[in-house]
Image (cartoon, rainbow over all chains, first blue to last red; front, side, top):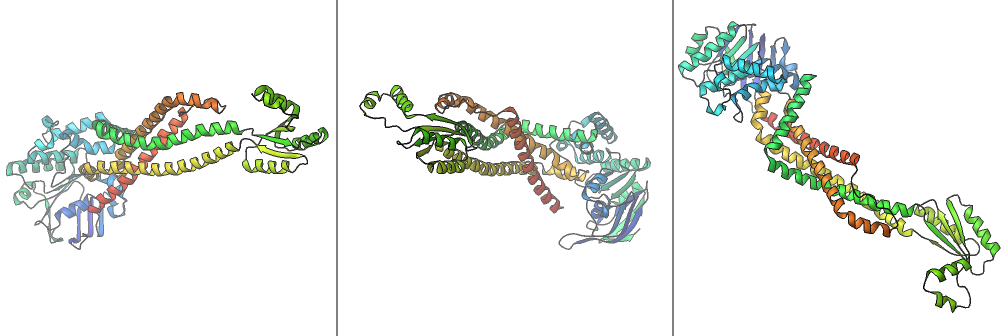
Length: 218
Length: 303
């Protein structure tokens, strides 16, 4: 489903975030990327989602080599991958509903179909009663769940989450992790990063450890 | 196809909504654009009216060919034949000196003065209508005819019309150049407005890209915004010109008969209004395209 082959990423200015990373994620698998902050977890996830391009090696998702895709094709591919951002990336000029509807709007869904899917996604994360609320008025955990709703509204086969439990207290974190487990159980390929040992225990999935941009143990 | 249409409808609705939500800001920018548009349109329309005056007077310029006082009837006839032999001559009218004298006596207040003369001071003359209005051709004819035997003087009436036509040509060039500059100015004005729009919607643009928007998806609402703004400015500009036309109609009605022409409608016809609105919309689109292209490149560079 996702295949990294000797992937490296060097940012302008010379910082080398990833070096020769090779590993696979099978279809329907759940994998946790672990490592200290600065180990390259976020970069790895962004490369898998086509949000950034690798400097070397190849990233193949669903049989498509991302490096060979043009900007437009890459954008269209992103619609089939749900991404939960560490900083949520919510828009505060519109309601929770409209935030979740954004990917569908971009993909050109009809209004009724979009509304149905948005409500289903909001229901899944328990935010349906707050669909009209502006994200500013939501708690950190609720914002995280809203971001998850936006990530799953397109019904992606791959769900990627960058530190989904980062700033949450234990109860919230558990609820979020259970959500990912439930997506995994219905066949979604889940790739997430965390440095939280409690989270890893709860997920009970394969771990890929990164240290200073290279694989530590697979 | 339906998806494509829906995307465009959404972008158009988004742009219209943005215009409507900031009525003052949108109104002022559209007003400025409309005034910039109205100037060249007004100049073009005014020139057309002047051109109509010139061309109506100009279509058949008169050339008066005065014969020498001592020309005989036979010689006068020969001159007449020479005049008629020119292909560009549409009609030749002979005015005998006696008739000219009579006309002068009856149509002017010079009867007493004329009565005191012991002979008719007027020569025989031909009034020639020429089919060409080209000043060079007229000059050539005048040259040829003044060399005919017993021709005293050739006066080409309507030289003022040629001069007017010259000025109108100059005016057209100036209008075209000025119009070009103003068109550029309009595109840049829209570009600036769109830049501000993109700046205020930076987050939306960024998030949209993260969740799968292509460059076209991002550009679309801005392009429609430019298109709408341009089209509305075009409509308003046509409105300005029409209002001015109504206001000056009275003056035109006084002025037109003086030059022996019918009143030329000093206004914009419907197809012309369509062209103006479409061009303005296109300019708005171009401005938006430039601005969004530059802004997106800037955003992409930050990633």
